[in-house]
Length: 534
Image (cartoon, rainbow, N blue to C red):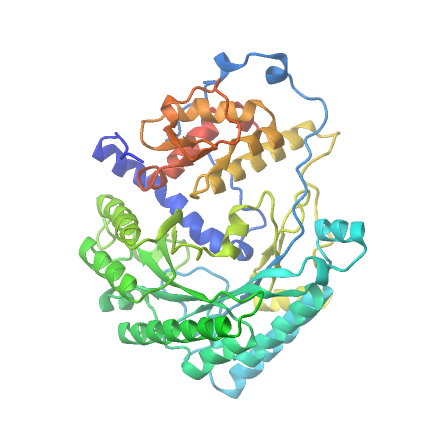
């Protein structure tokens, strides 16, 4: 897409708002660890006042009528994904506010081993005590088979924490429990987050032997000063060694799989994860990290923009945009450099913070970004599951003792609260519909695939796509495009809400539109009539 025709200074100002959206990638990566709903109340102070830009486009009774029947969200597809939280870390990084359990550097001690064993035992109990998702149970009831055979898990994600501190034999117990309870496809994507300096070749091979197929390696930076400032436990040299080990091991595993000529061969891949905007970093050090990342030949690169969280050391020490934090102009340059450098190496910028070689997208994370249609199981401390479109998400306690008591009481995905379809509470129903629509827009517009306009019309009413397009038409050119069924793109400012949008999708441009995605979404919140209930 053509660059946005927005003055440079204005783009940088909008980048400041975009930081919240960039952190959505981080939030989605750990969506299963977070608050029970991924849809926050979203009214940015800089959003334009609400005005009905759509009023002139309503042309029929169907468009303007208000249904008296309560809105009911479409059911999820059968749930075939699971997130497992492994909270153990050697230390807490200065920017981290995740739910973790610090074990120190002596991770091979008997005491640490016993703690991990106890945690895994409870994980297994939680897995076995969890009900099959309603959508899965309903689908199974139709054909009379079992969820294990009809809808086995196709993605599993071990996040943390630092999952690579957990020995392979303990991880295998968790996978065995998941396989027994839900089934596990032979070609499932099984991801594990790993940190440099926490594994050797034997341990990595052990993970692959039990079924891991994808590694997410938390390098964060190839600059030694930046790593030290962030409080990371590994060195640049350890990061380089880890990249080499992971690349070699997964390449060999893929070659072996193909040699066996299996009908449903596993697909091995790895991601190199970086954090932009760390204190003391500059445009030159960031470009150097990007170039070295490319040189390591990963299949996927994740670029997370630093979010300063309250309650962390960074939250006490630093303020965004104030030295030694990068200036807003530098942050905008870092975002563009990520897109241009990785794009030149054939990485698809398929989500705000995610870049993948062809066919190497992270399947599990795409479930989060498609949460209106897909759900996921979740297990472990602070994990949040999403197994029904009509019920609130279930968040496990963030503290170890509280989570242990929760599992012992087995308060699993049963006592959930309905979020829609209550005829006696019209306001609640309107809010639920608006929140669901906001989530579709927030998550869809941060991806390369964008938001399907037909789907919006089917789920939220025929007016909704027209309302969205009417607002996007008021934005500066070069930020959003409408993609037709033939793949051709038109700038959203040129698209009339009265035009036919069958089989069309709307998406933000790369990098300019994605860089200001939060402002665009906040403008939609302020101006789209279907979001007035928020």
